[in-house]
Length: 433
Ligand SMILES: *Cc1c(COP(=O)(O)O)cnc(C)c1O
Image (cartoon, rainbow, N blue to C red; front, side, top):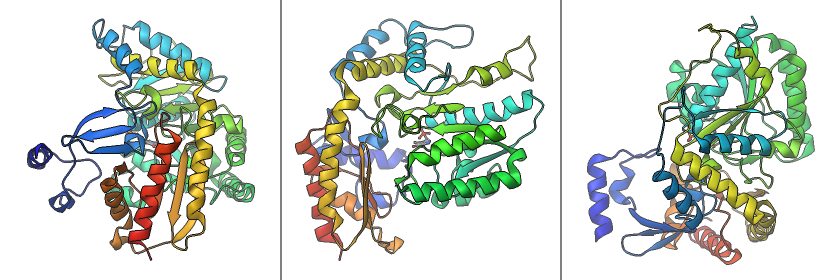
């Protein structure tokens, strides 16, 4: 009954993210008492496999002993310090490590405290870098169906109507070029042609192109061929347009390489990281950029040329400790290699859904597996029903409409992955037809 007690108190004072609160009149919110590895446990001892890494952030499980230790150590030393005029060892070490890991040429780290804020930073920096060179370019291009966060600037460059439409009058201008429709080379080539056409017409107005490399997350786990990235980057360089890689979801091994851009062998002008950066522990984000961009702001004091952007918690020391611990785990455990084996288990698991008639497509990119159902009537809320069915079986997944996906922490076992697929299969057996 503790579950109920807490969820009732919750309903009196909270307003939850991305939620119609009235839904919880009939389906109570679940209070979590503790986390351990891939499991979340409520106050009555029910356990749920975290099949979506708690909104795509968790990499090495909840209450990970190693990360816990490093955060506790930091806590006794320095919890936070202003990052203007001061620095701390954790953030210097973290920046050195990120520079060494990221595509060659990304040598500067600017921190914020969540993904959307980092997108704002990249957009402002891109615009401002052009401006500092006397070039007034205020237009951003993004891909159709893209998602870059919920703050107004980030929402402006996104293209998911569900989140964006209502706020349209508040947004800055952006235009979209088609995202490749699937993972084939042909679709990538077609999308490149469309981008070329757009550049032919409007390149001189455009400050930057922002993309989610290889996988569009919130837009429905749409996946595409790396050829699009390498060609789009080449075109951007040709036209003096910044290439902004939003790797907030795909960074840190999610697509099978440390960063998705590696698969296209490109160095973006801006690389945005958050989510997995701290292993899913604490809010932190970073915009990595080149000496060229950095140089556009570097001069004797001139308020108009300096990047006067800050957040109170920029570069928080506890978050940096979690991030450094996360990178230790990558180094010490050959995670990218180990994930190749887990990816094979995901692809085997997906196969059992391929022939079902309610399934439109299965697809996969590294540690993300997708079962997309045939189009359905939105008012049926099939995704919500699948979510609830799986919860009752001890599995947390959160379909995006009719797109059912798994994105587990990297410490999951093949047996636990099977359990997730069993739950999804049971949901489809019960709920579709
Ligand atoms: C989650 C996400 C964001 C926004 O990050 P928040 O920390 O939720 O603000 C931006 N871009 C992509 C690709 C994301 O997946």
